[in-house]
Image (cartoon, rainbow, N blue to C red; front, side, top):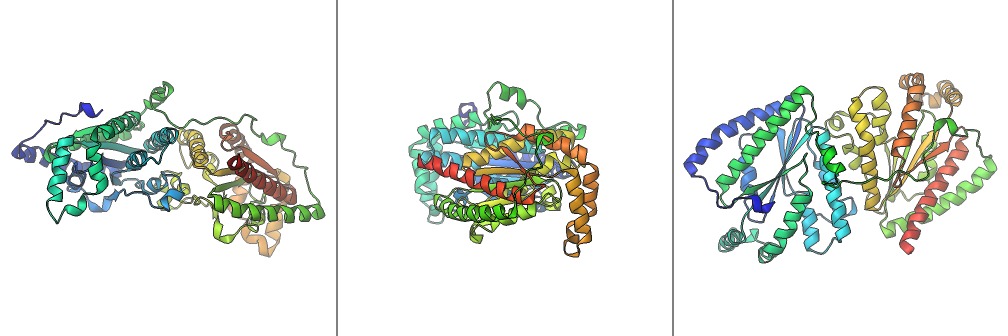
Length: 508
């Protein structure tokens, strides 16, 4: 792709001023239109060191209302950043609806910096390509326009710019040893960057290689792309069309690799087949509880030492016993090494982002355990049934959720998914018990009764959720919770078993 840029292009400064003025005025208007149509925009500025990224960003933001854009300068990942999936910090930076995010470097810099330092194997490199393509597609599907620019200069031009910076004491600090190394190995870097651009040049997030040997010429090229692509996105938003609709065919032909999710080989649960008569007496429960909690406490220490993250997800009927189940798990854990994340209806800030955004923010560090009391599966249950999202959005969510969990598994996380099941009669008995017990009355709400009236709708949604999201990376386990004691022991047993399996892999 780099060969496509004509580095000889120049524009007279008087001509530049004449052209850029109406372009800036148009971009100022488009910023307001973006808000009106509830679009988001990510403008990604990458390129060679000393290619003029800072100057390009300055020219982009000149006509913009500073209240409606943010600039994020990507630095090398810190030690803490490296304890999470590499895209987590970028997910957290994704813009709100109606806002523009301008990235000075990005997730791409993380990739090729690690490649050059020898920190990535070829397999890891390819996995990151897949992760990035998936990440960008998910954002575009949620009406975030992604505009990617690579500022291209020749080896000679880069060397001359470095020389000029080094010769002035006030700018000497801007040139690092790694920058000089980039120029010294320009040809080698050129090939790797070109390959990276080609692998991530998707229909929904294309690369624009900009001739940056003259800053004015670079600014005009960037503005031309910004204006044409934002106008196109606005036109599609006005007609209710997705921002891009051609990537499926491209992906089917294998042109743009994204995360591949494999269905579970052992099938998936079906609610009508669950045996809710399973139970456990109190004596057996007490003995097994002590034994399993002791084992889990021991394993938690090993997880911390080996830096293996664990994510335990709970979904289930109202009053099924999720809280008591979670309590028996957490009792066995070091409080410094786990978190319990209750998931309520999304607040205003969360609604202004992709629905997975709030869950990316709560991922555990490696070596820690995160327990989710309700999860991202709300998208295909309550949001589906209550029509808080469109049909196309919840249908698309199955793929997005599978990709998300596959990403977590590839990071190294142990994933455990529980559906806490009770029958309709048992739920009614527990509802009435809560109403008649003052200390438990707070647990029952009008919403619980409304959800109960939609039992059949939820049952259909749950069965489809099982069928479409039981994968090799994350299988569903049903906890038969008419007997809470039985369900608690089964959950502990499964968690211990899954952690032990993961630890045994590392020993082989």
